[in-house]
Image 1: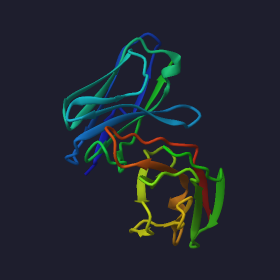
Image 2 (image 1 turned 45 degrees about the vertical axis):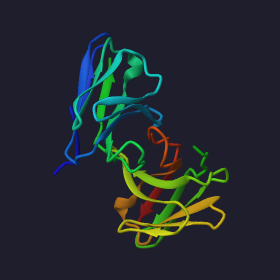
Image 3 (image 1 turned 90 degrees about the vertical axis):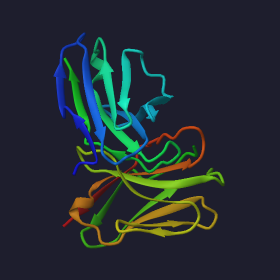
Length: 113
Length: 112
């Protein structure tokens, strides 16, 4: 059973398009995260939600809008995609907001042409 | 979060112990040492964490010096599947919200 799953695994799209990435966790965790790993392999937090409430927003352009319909799901919608958005996006979850023991999904590889 | 320093890369022969060092000389009293790894094309994977005492689980052992300014992750019998980038992260387990701040890590290559 996959603990943290993401769809799609690969996403190739044109500049200016709008796209969404979905994340689901079946661990019963309260907290979920989005991280971005750029071409230089730096991994940075973007957002965190706890029980459907936004608790971390790390200076991400407002073209990125996370949505948490319930605590098992955290989706990432990106408007007006730019070349610089090309990266691998990882979803993660943890039991509660304070812990650093986080479980990551397999990643979504986004390529903007 | 305290800054960490790790070697850029290391090699280890399969079956031998891999000892990955991490310096964190500015660590505060409430900060834990966490280790994650990222195997190529996969998401980061939690390995182990500790505060003061040495810790062991099914994946690895974590040795923290008495002054807590450095630590070593030990993979007792490295296999080819342990080839990955290993990240040492120092951070408190308290506060309003938790985020992992990844550095550049150590690229461990396990060879035959």
